Amino acid sequence: MVQLGVLCRMFKTNSTIGWAIGRLTATAGDLIAFLRAPKLDSADDQPLGKLPDLAWLFALNLIIVAAIAAILLPVMLLLDIKMASSMADLFNRPFWQLIAFVVVVGPIAEELLFRAWLTGSPRLLVPFFGVLAWLAASTGLLHVGWLDTKGPIAAVLLAVIVAAVIIGLFACWKRTTPRWFVKAFPLIFWSQALLFGFVHVFNYAGGNPVALLPFVLPQLVGGLIWGYARIRYGWWANIALHMAYNLVATSALLYMLLTQPEVV
Image (cartoon, rainbow, N blue to C red; front, side, top):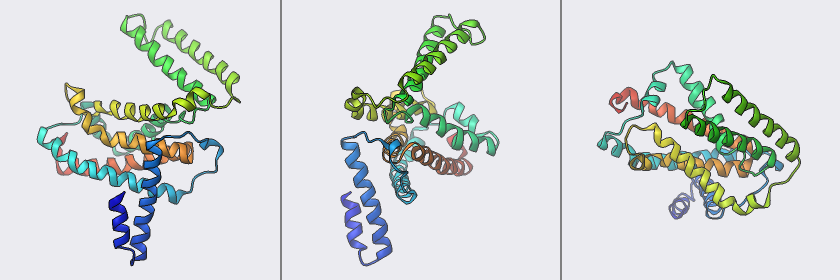
């Protein structure tokens, strides 16, 4: 923030550069203020945010991640940290499949799971808890050997959860955000970002996930910025930012893999 302010004063005579740095400074300032004390606003009831504002937030996202990558990439090469086989296989798919999975399907699925419900609206929380119930129940039953994805237990479990979600939607559709969610929002907000960053540790090959945690800092930054966009601008903004970020990141990775294939 201080450095951006200094640059803004340095380029004050140049209206274009000074204006751009000023916009970045204002965007960074609002983001930092929000992250220090996340506050729940009813983004779904507000007018859609302006696209130019979102563009500056996206630019800030790229600047932060580029600074992190400048430090992490040499460390990855030094420690010979490679992409997980599942990620490497994904980048070996045809280009249209890569774009479909990484730029379209992936961001939509991840934003629905991690941030669609972040406003605390009951009609969004109910499906979210339904997904959590399915993941927890199916994982537990698989662990004890009671669940076969092709057997009747899986179908019954899914039917029960879907029925519960439908009933819950009818019961909670017009209800306002619960008080407990509002009070716990700062913890909820940071938890979703930390969890979002952590699950991406499996993008890298290694026997010790803890040792790989520094390399998911870009995803942690994404979880914070896209969560902020979800609250400030509404459901569409975080999805748009995530898609745009993945497009840029995928292009950069493809270039790196073409020039340094040993990374894979």
